[in-house]
Image (cartoon, rainbow, N blue to C red; front, side):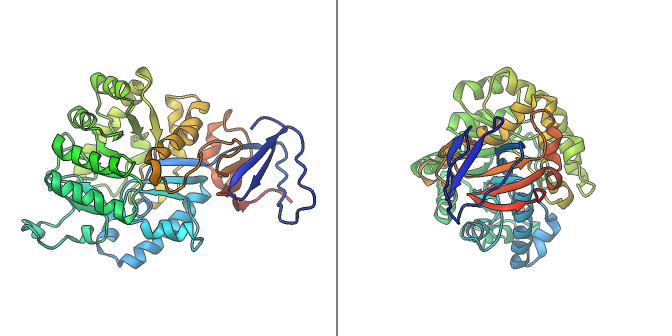
Length: 406
């Protein structure tokens, strides 16, 4: 906000912004926060997060009691909000119950745009079945990860359509498909692989569009990205191996590029298996080129941190924003993680779980606000230390943190 602004929040929205003091009379329900000339900015939005899996190692996810894992996810959700991320788009995991608990005030956390189970072909990036579970006969029992709502295995347009509709039935705000291999893929799943056929992808897109929403797809390689775009997918997740032709295609079709600053410094884990390390290096080497292509062709670009299975890395969620300074000015970085990501959230159309404007400080916008001790437009590093620098955190008009000096 500009200097000497006064902001009135009523309910869950910004009611008024004025250069002059706002007269609210003697209303006893009004809480006054003297900001002392500090910077007021919108709450941060992470467009690629895994609330259920960000801080919990994969070995735990495969073996621990689901109720215990949900408690871990709830604790991490509160930590996410306290890092200044008032909204996350969850791109895979059983978070419907967590979202409800947060929305109802049972526990504390950010707004969650849930995808539910990510949908994968057999042998795809989301197929984490044990070898003894193969082959699965038609109509056979679901695997552990499917039963827990982490993934959904589907082959053929009809099966894909069914799994999409199931996630929509559970409350998904968008649909996540796996369109190629990835860093954390199981063995024998090369990152260059193209997963799903165009007909299968179109079935998912059609089912999502019938609910007013869209499909986002995990894909790194040009072939899988281009196939997804032809099928009508609206958002590409990752894409670090994209080439010029693919970036140009994204720009021409108005497709969002949900890029993450995946680098050796930010995402290499000591617990990463050797096969994953090799794939990770391919991705890390492509990150710089991907951002340069996104800028060159003016592709609509979203920010996401995409942390998996690493509590220490999850605690540095804001640091990923600072890394973006390699390619963008601080104002561009902050806009990407607020207003731009807010527009991406709105793609969920008439099933948007939080109808209203996100990522901006304007009259009528949802009141997700941060009061910063310093100016992040001048020093982007401030967002990397939220404990110290985010003095007030408000979500949906409610103050969850206020450490202003008394």
